[in-house]
Length: 500
Image (cartoon, rainbow, N blue to C red; front, top):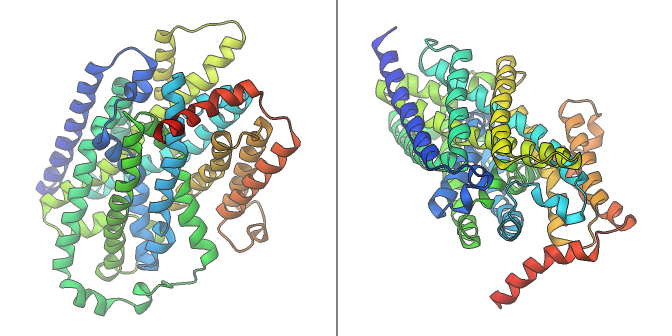
């Protein structure tokens, strides 16, 4: 093992030790209560909320898939993948996160599906959406594991193999989620977010100067790489739904995002985040897209899967040795800032929205201490499942992420209906969620014929199907009782009256 590899491993190790220490400090502050484990007693201030949501959004998708896509398509990736996303994500955070926080504050809800049982006086929609949330979160968790394994293997020149790299990062993120809960994930997200931003900016400046500046870079690019149309066939029917739904509106109901909004110290913090988020999001992805485009000049001829490694390849070829270790820490920051939150959100839904109410219906009452232990056990169980899937690595990070994002986008109408439409019924929400997610899954796995998507990205017909079934079935079925409707909508009406 060469000295450069040892230096890289040492720098990454320092970063990982820092993460463990912060998680340990958070664990010492932990109270043995579910509201502290899952939503940090609703105490996240503006910095913690901004960095935890921003960090959760980036993942391996932002650090590996987006540059890979830009490597192949050019700057049009900003439209295709990012486009409307910064603004529609903020809209989702506000439309869903704000009202969910108000309900959680009033009635003590601690998970993103907690309120769905009370909304209609029936736990069935709560169970259905909980299962769908977990099933859609698993692919999201998977891309983090794949990214971790790929990065550590690449920057250490294979000294840390793929399987070991993924396992090492999984163990640390599992510890943070298991021991520190939401507080641990939020505190580490601040640390990880600043490292991620600093590293990616330094990398951009360094590569820009190495390649000779803008004139030299542009002179070597295929003109299509800097055109609006991009390189290769693209259509509005593909990129508008993708950026509007998959990387945009879906974020309002992705469970590890929504639970962070529920953890805010006040609605004002949520509102301020919706203003800050587009600036951070747009700036960050402009840098990663640029690195991917410039990489097509510096290291041409890579396949789609090989191009997922373009940023660490650029560092290995053009950056000093110390920068490779720093870059590895930055990419791992993006991955780990999401992974621990995903594990925590999944465990919270499993224990509080599936196991607890099912046992309660059978006359079995769990103490908070036992439920806390079950939640933490599920974190361990899900980590093992995720690791086994990571070892399989079924396809590219982009393909896996797209299915997950599209599925979450299809849950948005049901959440919106539950929070804004008094006439929305449980059967409308259930039918909307199940039929649209099934459609997305069949489309993603190429089981449905191509014509069923009407030349659009499959998320678009899935989302439209979700709206049609929500409205149609709700109008044909019986709404919730007046008591249930009043319980929820009076909370919102009081806030608006106070504001006036």
